[in-house]
Amino acid sequence: MAYYRSVGDVPRTRHTQHRDPEGRLRHEELMGEEGFSSDSSLLYHRGVPSAIVASEVWALPDQARVPNHPLAPRHLRLHDLTTGPDAVTDRRLVLGNADVRISYVRTGADPSAYHRDAVGDECVFVESGSGVVETVFGLLPYRAGDYVVLPRATTHRWVPAEPSRLYCIEASGHVAPPKRYLSRYGQLLEHAPYCERDLHGPTEPLLVEGTDVEVLVKHRTSAGVVGTRLVHDTHPFDVVGWDGCLYPYTFNIEDYMPITGKVHQPPPVHQVFEGPRFVICNFLPRKVDYHPLAVPVPYYHSNVDSDEVMFYVAGDYEARKGSGIGIGSISLHPGGHAHGPQPAAIEASLGAERFEESAVMVDTFAPLELGEGGTACEDPAYAWSWAGRRL
Ligand SMILES: [Fe+2]
Image (cartoon, rainbow, N blue to C red; front, side, top):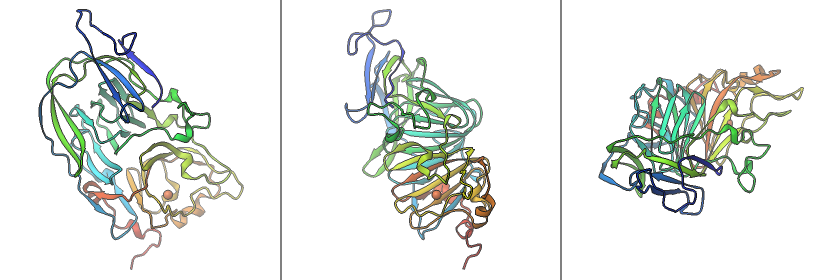
C-alpha cells in the first residue's frame, strides 16, 4: 500500500520531540512490514503502546480443518450458516490452509471485541450491511461491496450500523494490489482496473479515553494460529496523528472497471488483490465477448496448481445455472478436477451481451481444507451436477 498519507498531528521532523499542549511527550511508534525494509507508518500515541497489564489465553473459534478427501468439487451454502453476532469472535471457519483462511459471520448491531490479527492482513468482503471499523489509524466507514483491508497487527473493532454479512479472507502475510498493476515505484498503472482515488483510508484520528482495555490478538505459533487476550493499560485508540504508507483502507467493487474482450477473458483480468500463495479476483456486471461466434461462459478448465473458491454475491451467475448454486453460495473447485459450466449453460449463454453476476474468487496455490462451518452447510449433491447422476 505504497501511497503516502498523513492524518492528524505529526511533528515536522520524524523521530524528534513531539509534545501535547501541556508539554507532555507523545510516544512515537513505527509500524512496519518486513522488519524495517518495507512499507511503514509512524504513529504518535498519547499513552505507551507497549503498556499491557494482563495476558491470557483467548480460545479461538474452532479452527480444525479436514482435507478435501475423497476429492470432490464442493458447494457450500453460507446463508444456511447461523453465527453469533460478534464480527470477530463469532466467525465460522469455512475453508482454509496454511496461507489463507476464509470464515463467515452475520453480525448483530453491537460493536465487536477489539481485535488485531498478528497472523496476517485481513481482507474482509462486506456482502451486505454497513457501519464503521474503528482502527488505531482512525475510522473506516464500510458498506456492501467493500473490501476492508486491515494490515497485520492493526488494532480495530467492527461497529455495525446494521447486521452485516462479512466474508473474511485472513492471510498469513500481506494483501496488496497485484504487482503487474504497479509502476516500479508503486503507482497503479493505466491498465489497472482501479486507481488510488478508489482506495479510501482514514481521514482523521480516533481518540478514545479508557483504561484496562481488552484486545483479542490472533497470532502465530509453531502449532498454528492461536489467540491471546491482552489487556492494555490505556486505550489503544490514542493516536493523535500518523503518516506513512501502511494503513487500513476500503475498496468498493462498484469502482472496479472490468476488462472485457472479443473472446472469453481468463480470470487474471478480474484480479483485484494478491496475497502470499493466493489471489483475489472479482467477477462483476459487464459486457461480454463480442466475437460473432463467442461462447461467453468459461471453457472447462483444470487449474493444475490451484484450488478455486467462488463466492456468489449477487446477480445471476450464468455458468452455474442448473447446479443448485445461488446467492450466498460458495463453490470449491479443487486442483485435480476439471470444472466449467453446467452443459445446458453453454447453449443458453450464446448471444448474451451482458452478465449481471457479482462474485468474489479466491484462488489458492495450496489445497484448501474444510472448516467446521464449511462442513455444516455443504450441499452433497453438487459434485454430480455436471453428469446429472451418481453411481
Ligand atoms: Fe474456474
